Structure formats: C-alpha cells, structure tokens
Amino acid sequence: MNVRLYILQRATAAIMVPLVVAHILIIFYATRRGLSAAEILGRTRGSIGWGAFYALFVLAAATHGAIGVRAVASEWAKLRGLRLDILMWGVGLLLAVLGLRAVAAVVL
Image 1 (cartoon, one colour):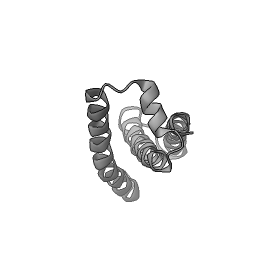
Image 2 (image 1 turned 60 degrees about the vertical axis):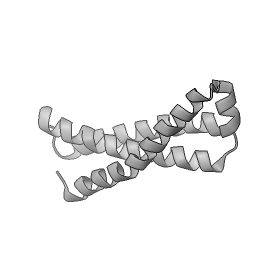
Image 3 (image 1 turned 90 degrees about the vertical axis):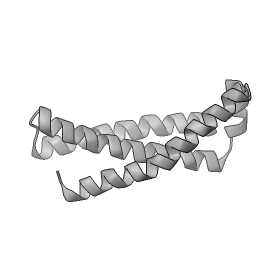
C-alpha cells in the first residue's frame, strides 16, 4: 500500500478514537436522562459545534473506510491501478455524501 495512504489511515483512526469515545458518552448521557429523539434533535438543531463535531467524524470515517476498502479490494479482488483508485474514491465520496447528509439532517 502507498505509504501516504497508510499514514492517512492511521491519522484518521487517531482522529476517530476521541470522537467515538465522545459519541458513546453522549449516547449514555442521553439514554440515562431518558431523552427522546425529538429532545435530542432540539438540542442539536442550529448548533455549529455539533455540526463540526459530526462532520469531522464523517470525513475521518469516510477516508478511513475508503482506504480500508482499497486495501481489501487489492488483496482479495486483485484490483490494481486506476480501477483500485476509482473504487477507493467512489467509496469515500459515497460515504462522505451520505454521512454529511445525515449531519445536515440533524443539525440544520
């Protein structure tokens, strides 16, 4: 695998670790308080902070996942070159678009 992709995948993992921990803590807080989905959405609507938090999460996860799919496709499907890069970019863009749409739905 390309050294830059290797480093980028490790960097996105390092970014995601605190975000995952914070997300899980938020879930525990909300469920222990008995907050409904409507109450949670009421707290996140219009919040630049929550939007930035989850947008960063989505972009890191999309990048991390696309690089992982590339590695698996290279090893299992024996894809190489341009086809492999197109697959990686396609998966990454799809994940980013779907994730950012979800963030927009929760924040906007």
